[in-house]
Image (cartoon, rainbow, N blue to C red; front, side, top):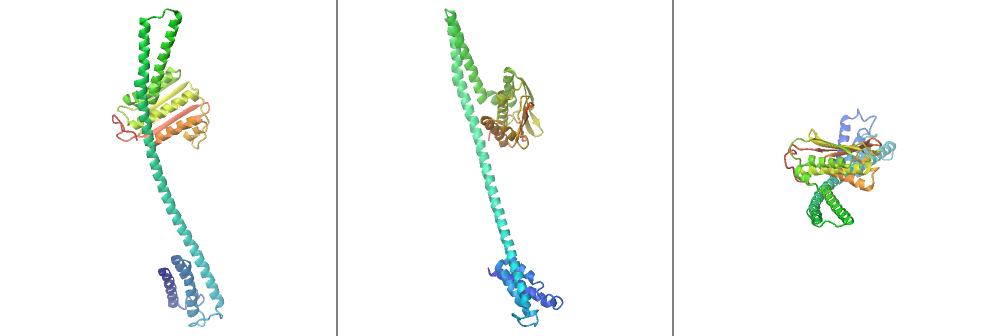
Length: 362
């Protein structure tokens, strides 16, 4: 506190000393010249109180040294008006400088608070991304477990029942046409159940993805579309070696979701899936020539697709975006009514990403 007032006193003292040194060249016509600067210095470094003190000391010093009769205080005499005006000027300067000081302090405090909040937000985002990554890993592990149980449990049991019933029917053929029809119907139901169980396993966690990699798993997805009657084509330019497990899983799920939307909504007769390297990135594209939709996002990207999607689709689109974002990649969805839809995912690859076996998820 005393330092702030001391600065004001020193500023006035230095100004009066300079004026006395230069007297009478700069004081004859302007007895208050430079004293306003001392008020500014006092107010800027000390605040309103030191500014007012500098104003008072400056007025007294000018009155004593530079206003006639010099060497005495004129008080309320002939110098009253200039002293009053200088005092008013000092009051205004001190108030203005104090307001500027307070505004600067508030701005600095606001900047510090903004920095703190940004750091907290960044930390929350990092934690959320970490938790999301763990959730994705846990989801894939649960899918793998359920797929294994369905494959080793339900599918095997139904397949065994199918074979057992075939063997029994061969040893004990039905004696009537009606019995043969019922037997054939039962066998067909069991055969369809086996096929559906295997399809469920393939959707949950296709073993081909773990055993042979992304390209083979995508090709099987395209082959399934061809079996359903679509003109489905596949293009792959990955080269040799396996990709990290996290990359393979994420891009497979993106393609799987995109192809599911093709089946459900696009009414397309043609679809093309392409996967390949683009520099130091991996690029996946799923393109259909279906009915498309009007994208409403700012860049015509994934956000634009949400405007036309039902809640289930929005969840799927969000899942696609989150999986790609966890790998530091970018997902873009473009579409036009009548021109089809393109889903493009790009994921950066490290120099070690092409090594066989890949890495762990998360």
